[in-house]
Length: 113
Image (cartoon, rainbow, N blue to C red; front, side, top):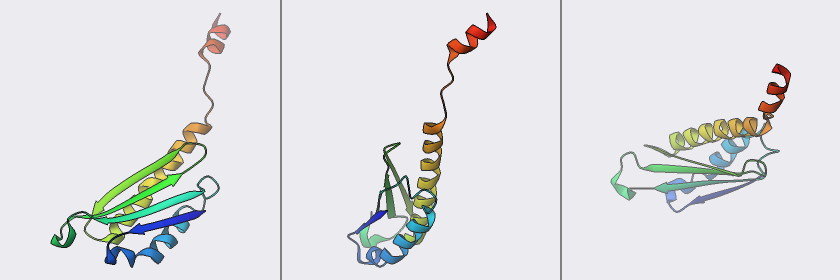
């Protein structure tokens, strides 16, 4: 799995190692379905502070397309953890939906007749 990290903020760039490690850990079961992942950090308000650290996680798959999740928090670590957690839940749910067979209504009607 290839993980791309992007950050224009100097403080966000310090999170590179941790971000890659957390992504690999969180996606260890789903790594066969996710060939490419991208983590992007942006500081929405700049130096003014507040709830403005944005982390966007983008997971590209062959089966269900692309999953993009973003979250805002006070610090980089919280934004990263929220985004990764939500992205893995959404991806797991999407893969389960794609795997379930669709029941055919005409088969049920034929049995009832």
